[in-house]
Image (cartoon, rainbow, N blue to C red):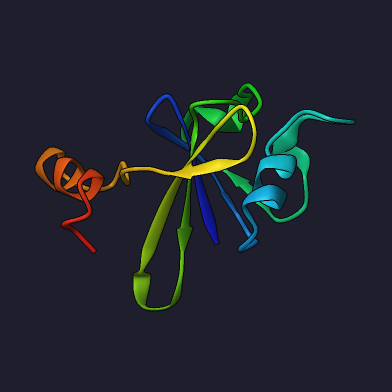
Length: 99
């Protein structure tokens, strides 16, 4: 499962382990992304939200609740601090000291 965050706010969970697939499914292509199979819009996104774009975060949630966070870049994805962590944990994770 992948959690999708726009501007630090959760907007969706996507039933996939692929960053590329989660990105595709949370973009308006032929219909609103909230209507795509395997996507559950959360919070205000249930009433419509923009497509996932550069700067947004995708968090892969694996077995045992392990989490790996990535930011959407102009080309591809880059490791990022998990928005579910506290501010102190985010600072440490950026420097490779957490998880």
